[in-house]
Length: 422
Image 1 (cartoon, rainbow, N blue to C red):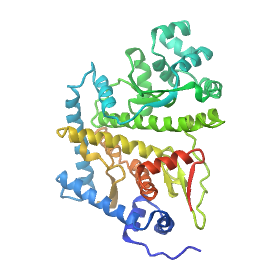
Image 2 (cartoon, rainbow, N blue to C red; image 1 turned 30 degrees about the vertical axis):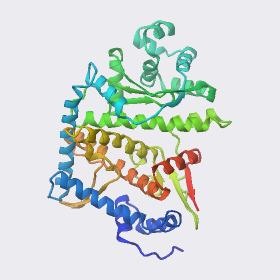
Image 3 (tube, rainbow, N blue to C red; image 1 turned 90 degrees about the vertical axis):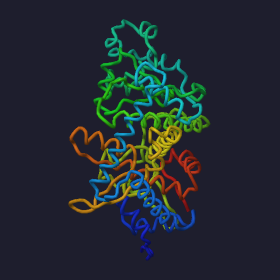
Image 4 (cartoon, rainbow, N blue to C red; image 1 turned 180 degrees about the vertical axis):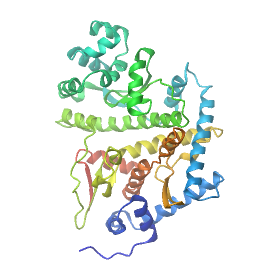
């Protein structure tokens, strides 16, 4: 039988934003308060409200209707992007993409990583001849490809030219034999694909709707130089670029951790597949709380996924928070660009009055950049799934004692898919 709890206005507000039962959240807070102290959700509710008021004041928006709030956030993205593109003209590089790559290296605050040695990308292609890739490039054999192409650029193209059967077979055969000795410490690399990859780049952009990709195990990020002249897309993709620096660094920490285990190859493959615990029935005990570790956006795959109602922490939200923080810090050093506005906004949002009642508005950079793109394409879609995951992750961080402690808990429990308190 559920304990009768007095539910504060702060808990009610956070539950409303998360679209979960207020009694469930109050019960969670009561249990977590024994670990982290009381008042976490009330404090976050106040902070959320204060940030929104501060941002709308800075944007000179006195009208609090949902359409005006969404509109002023879209305009902020629009003008920030114009100023950012103007700033890029003075950065070294032949194209906007080269300039973006060079700038991202300078502002992403990440260290060295633990990655598969370059030679293994070569070995994989030698053992599993990529017929479609060779045909696309017009080469007769792997030796010719390796002489004329960057191995990581070739490796990045495989998913778009080779069959799923080839990809799955090659993945199983190659990655099942890797050990920690096959990894080394080196910097994260970022590459702008050359013109020979144009058709493949178009396929990628058409499928993913953005210009950025990566190979976590090799520590490589790619920019596909396909120009998309729709306001919001360039800034959105640059933020994603910074996100990938932090995502790759995070997975590198997991590679290092699993390097000490006996089943390194199995864990490596699970990480690269993005495995998520499938048991949506995982529940907390009478005196304990279980948090799911979910490394995907479940809402994108199924808005009715029952795990969306469970306490969870999402590493993706951590990467976004860090990437957007890098962008905001860059904005503080370059005030004319205006990007400092978006720091600590990933988890912020609230309901505003609309024509048909209260409607939710996310204040997250990525949600609003995607919203601007949709608006410019005449679709009028609104996004908030980044914000919702970020709020869950923010709550977990507060209970855990801060970002560093949160990350340690995630890494220590990643293979279990659950973090348990109590």
